[in-house]
Length: 314
Image 1: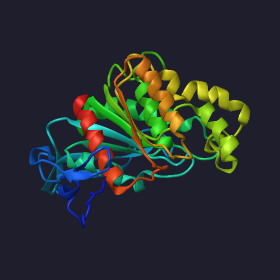
Image 2 (image 1 turned 90 degrees about the horizontal axis):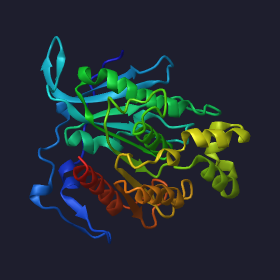
Image 3 (image 1 turned 120 degrees about the horizontal axis):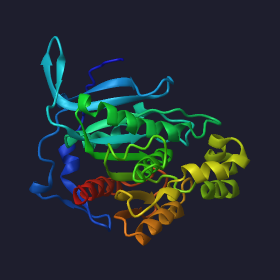
Image 4 (image 1 turned 180 degrees about the vertical axis):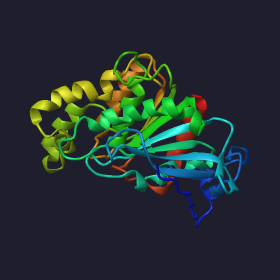
């Protein structure tokens, strides 16, 4: 297992980001002093272990960020004695591209607030379905088995991801709300506090139909599954929409209404079903927003909404 000290050199003040909030109409206003994070963000309060194995395949690796303090030789870093709420972050890339190393900006504000972070890599590539889906479920099993060593609070696990990562986060969180739904179910050992879905796929077969008609050269579903005749079965087994029940954890979806890769109706479909079952949920619609295409004000609104949602659903 590789062990490296992770140091971030920050060229701007994170408290400047924290000290603003945005109204729904996009106007930026000052945040009250008591709404700021409880302490200043200091990078020396956490470290990272890179490429920790959670499976036998070389792609089944994760980076884990833990809170604590540096104490010098011989042990160098001492983790916090208290278990910390933990974000599981899953990168996107159409289940074919992308990597965990490029996504730290998505979760830096969790570290700022004293969370641990598990940043996941998974098997991906042409014709690899359903490997990525199985991998994220394996990660939650790994967390259930290693929580004490890394001081992960198994009662406060948030799963999140963007695009294909949003799909995988939804799937992992929802599957683990249904006992015996999958051999890798660990919902009796790990409590999913919430799912934060950044414009993820909710119905695989429907998005395949949309991409086939509108963007056939960018049909990432077909690239992942490879054989058209397999898509209905993969969709049935691995579409988050099929695992929505009244026991689902709270779900926040972040979605631009002008997204042409994961269209807005994917988010609507999910949240209409959640709403019909009385499950806590929120759909944050960004007007004019594209696939990871938001304004400065919208990004600030997104992160404020995330932490407001988590505070309301502890």
